[in-house]
Image (tube, rainbow, N blue to C red; front, side, top):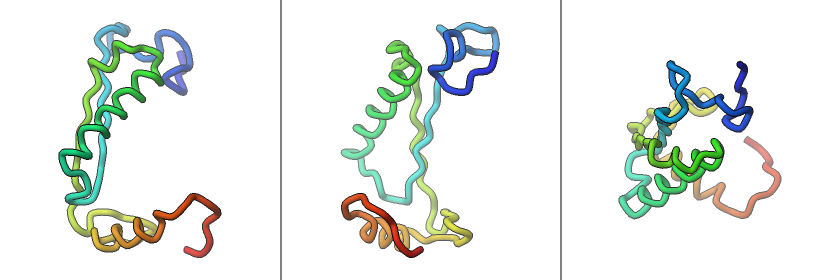
Length: 106
């Protein structure tokens, strides 16, 4: 059975034995070093867990969802063919933190 999305059809989210009650989902959050202190980690994990369970249409999946927080070392991000430093990421975030709208330039 083809399952292009979690909501595609009943039975799409199953383990190797075809059992949907023992499936575990792991979500990885990759940030630059120091981006998420404890006060930010808690809601990120909670919200991602809720998103996974809602996308699957299975509230019980929240209890079987794991979130892995990983910090990329300085220069560990490759963006547009450039090994980007944490300082460059922070500058980009400040530059891009305005209201959403059409992007211009690079």
